[in-house]
Image 1: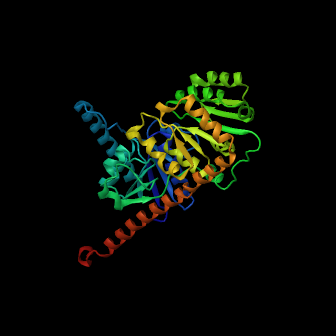
Image 2: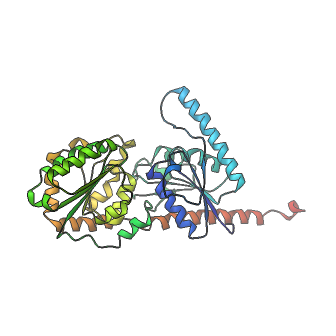
Image 3: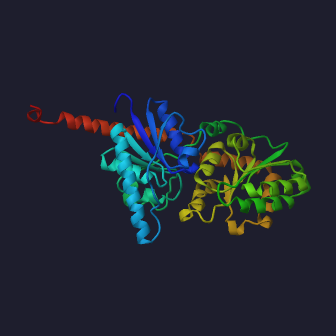
Length: 382
């Protein structure tokens, strides 16, 4: 590698893609690397991520659908993005290009492959995403978040390395702290995510109403909702006399996870990984429209360990949830045991593991390049 190795990370603008890419960049920066981000317009808007990095938006397009005209238009856009990426790499050749999924990763990695730059893909979910499936046969390495990954072609399994899903340092820090004492207030955190939070906003208050007076008297709730649901949910808890904070966006999620005894949430990749690392028991309600049903598969490792349970949205009713909550809150030792089980499958060193893989690949490529240069016949140089 050069004196100052350089990485390009490419990620579509969702938190599930952006946060792991950011953690990798920060880890590599501490090791002396510099970094460039390729993303879309949404990715530029995430606060607190990739500060001090060069950021570039390149043409990208969805590669789904069956309309031939749409395919042709998407292909033309992707080729433009590939050309833009190659121009960027000529300005400063990266030691490696890492893709984290999402449409911008596709042309960015195609450009790297065309230029012979080492490549890596990381998938945050337990089902390999569409862009990563298309590239799995061509990249140098595949980093996974789970030991069992659906839709990973067996012929590419030799390229796969389990690293986990990198999470932010404030979440990693929670894993070193004890589970909150349960002899006082019982803290429930409800995280609806960016999609489909209305299902949780509708069911959870009704389930809480069905709890015993003893449990409700000790309960405090923080709930993230869709903006249109914030006041309705707040009013429901006020009517029940339960201290509650409802908001469309929770700025300090680490603080909320840190004080939570139990979390009800969608099972997006970042949420599952963060709760496992922090050691917080969960009731997962997978988003039924998630691509390839990946949110269901994301729950498998944590539920098998005993750190969570999963309820399909079709079964997520107040009548199903209320007794589950009552049983957990009246047996705090069960919550503590589940917290330990959740932590047992957390991978707090995922960022370091991924950075190690990047450095191995970049170092191997640099060694190969040096060996090739040294093997040139002297006559060629004359």
